[in-house]
Image 1 (cartoon, rainbow, N blue to C red):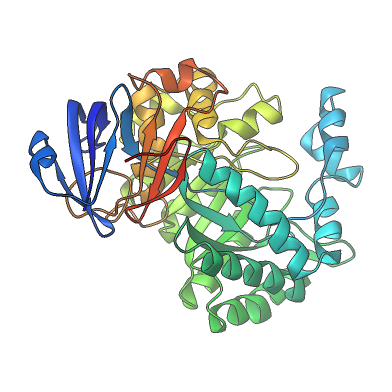
Image 2 (tube, helix red, strand yellow):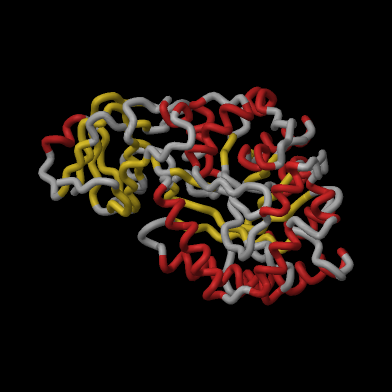
Length: 404
């Protein structure tokens, strides 16, 4: 038994807001939350943590990353500062294909070493569940290599962080291959192998008119669905591409980016309960003046999640407290929306909302203690690490201090 006592605020995230409980305690047994009330302080326990002056909240859920890669793209960052657009960088030989080249050359051992360092940093910043996409292979051997790296990371870190694998072979069109031929390979070779080897839970596609258009994206995602891979979709990031419509039509669990979705697409997403995963870190890196239609999403009652989109080209931010702040500053989200987006709604985008994302009896004890007296400090102290303790499956996996 573990008791965390005297917290200034406990953000339970139950209901539709933050569910704040003040000056209270919670108890954990094994890997589950057993109670959230003052009476826990009277229970005999093996370990006690005094959270006086701190807040307790669920661990962050980062539901969109491209964390396994080799190489870097600082040249691309500099090009954007000079005014180059996403498409212009791509035409100049940069973008996704640059990372594909370096990732193809890297061994599994090298990729594991690089990714593990990133995962260690995620944990220090409070992420307890992370989705990782493939997509820097664009050929069968490398896509499988990346997914096997993710599986190894799952096993190595099973007591430290939950890792959810997504197959994103449809991330770009490889050089010197016709798009139709590559789509055929995705459907007839890659997806069946990924499913056979049980290497992914989701199938994603980069749905843009200049990459995989709406009909091509639907074809790929339905093929994945046939093999048991739940559909996700990169939708309407660079321009309106019909991605939101396809998300609703095929019943994707989430549609991600959504800078230019149509009203029709958003209505279709709402009808099928598709989660909107928004990525403000990418908007910052791309210097985009466009933001998602938050007000329409609110009006329709669409579930809004936040992800980091951590990747080497368009967002090197992995710290979810910063993503929360950017959701507020760039997208005009309320702090309640942003915190829920990085916890319970992120969990819903991964199909895990019954297990994580809130603080309530029976949920997994994936918790954070933040060294602040009020949740409003999360975006206010922009860029500062406020994480005092990270608890995963009921065990302390990171702490600045030693508790008795």
